[in-house]
Length: 362
Image (tube, rainbow, N blue to C red; front, side, top):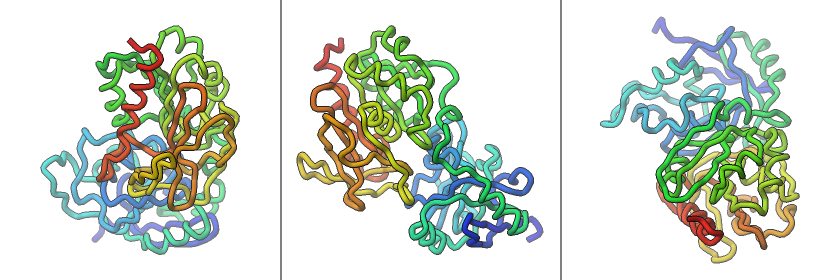
């Protein structure tokens, strides 16, 4: 029992939770970030390594985490970018034939701090009612933790894309088409799906549109990523130069920056969509998809001119997809590459291929 690290979690509004430390030791005894909750029943490794969580502390609502260990194949990025994890119970023993490591060792190896033993039901209800907010946890006293929480900038008004994007271009996939993918925080699973359709050149988020067009791509892909779409860097000014020149497909943050480039508006949601069972309806067909989602910002319904809004979230009416009325452009807010149980949304990659073929792809 001597190795138990007694921690506190303190939210910016003063709410206090007690638990014990897992993973790496926080620097100077404090880990801080915007606290959000995710409702997935499995896939904790994919969530933790999703670059879209940069700047955030992830609360898992499912009570038992770590029971099947971790393995390199399920990493969505080379390392986690989240600020920490909050869980109810960390499995003492993992059991799965694919496991290469236990979750606690994984967190320690990547320098990610965590807190376990938290009443995550109470915490989730509090975030749901009060909204996502900064928090801090660690060995420091409650006053120091609250001060750290209040000093944390959160995710609004900050460029987080520059912290997660690739430093240099690289190529993946062997598909017959040519796609340039802007890495705004791209997931490995996303690239695997694109790589079946095309030879994909992944470029940094600040790549000029002229350089992209010089590659003569059949299509341009805009990936997921973290934070405020209005602060996503030069992609905001470069993207309008690509519109009308090449077919474009955007997912999550890609959907948001594309909507901004088309003249739309975005806003920060109260607590966002983070989970693997979010119902989305295709308004054209009435079909409902069970989707994986991870976003704190959304596109304002009705704000994007000259598009048909194609998908809507049945939980809260949020805009989930659109297609341009004249140009070869479409995007969705959710994650069609993810496999939260169903694979309802993977047809969207085929639609991207069809769009490129219809516009002259070789």
